[in-house]
Image (cartoon, rainbow over all chains, first blue to last red; front, top):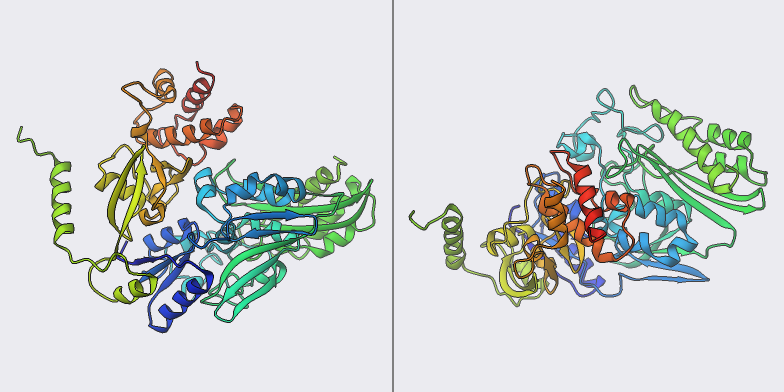
Length: 330
Length: 196
């Protein structure tokens, strides 16, 4: 890698200031949580060579999980491994613990942070192989007429990336709220509004401005009786991104579904919530037929490309199966 | 024999270069360091690392990864560099007890932390039970991924939980063996966990 300075701010305010100051000076500075995605992108020259990397790991107070009856606060620097193994999270928010467990490899989970996992850049093979694509400021998305087996069936255009984060799907399913720190202090963004489609912003996958950082995540209180699961289909058993996945939570009263949240991963440039399919389940006793109906509804309107039509069938089966499993009907 | 190996020659050359470079202030705060970065030599930082129980105070370029420091500056070449992208696992070491990709972690980030490498496994000339089991089960073929496999296996056994076929698979999933000797690795780790 070309030379850069590693800067270790002691506070969030200082981190934001360093990022802003670098930009004002016409320099390139990137924030680093775990840093593995960033260093890979720098080595592959997928991003401009940095003048500095602002290491967030020394900022105190961002690496803890506080679970309580009124809600849960997760620091942005909590590692994916810690999140996956946390007793409170496993008990109260199984969908999130399972999504965290499904990430990459032990090595990546041990350094990777929840904020970094949520904000990781796309893993489209054209983007990562250095093609001059739309996401990198070029003038076309090569997946449109190219190898689009892994690409979006919902929300695509003009870029057809899929969002690579497992935990992002779970956080949307849990109605999480994201704490964002920036030059003007802190703001809170619902998870459902955090991620943005390529048609709204081609350069970024979320609402963060240049000097803003995702620093924490709040989860609403977990409800008794609400169960959840994260199911991920991969083209091998482990160490890859979802071909399709589903983050599902169900609030059950006996056999009857009081409330449901279904978010599909691997199918769209953002975590893809399918409210119409949730509506199919609301207030109904879960049966195999109803689960199938919800699954059919979830995939209505999908627009597959030439080589990813299989995702429609696969996601449909995954939704049906997950609804039955989580409701205890299977 | 001249007594000069390729490695010692390279090592001396890079030490010479490092010694003649002018260094920016090492105690500078982030702001000063950012300003000093404009041009000139690569920014450097003094760090302290404990490697296999031995503490090292050294000065590193900020851009150096942990594996570069281990291999090129501490001469611990048991840790390999394969993909250099956090994909293959050849560079796996333990950082404060957890296995990480040393190619995807800057050495400055490890300041104050404890690193364990494959060189730290054998004690007083006695192989670690994992190493012994690797030999007995013909786990290494070409051997390139082996030190990484060992360190991921070590992280698993350090957890102290019950070791199963499934937990071994999950623990070693980030270590790719291009000879595809995965089943022998799995058998070796299982055997070591049972003290066999």
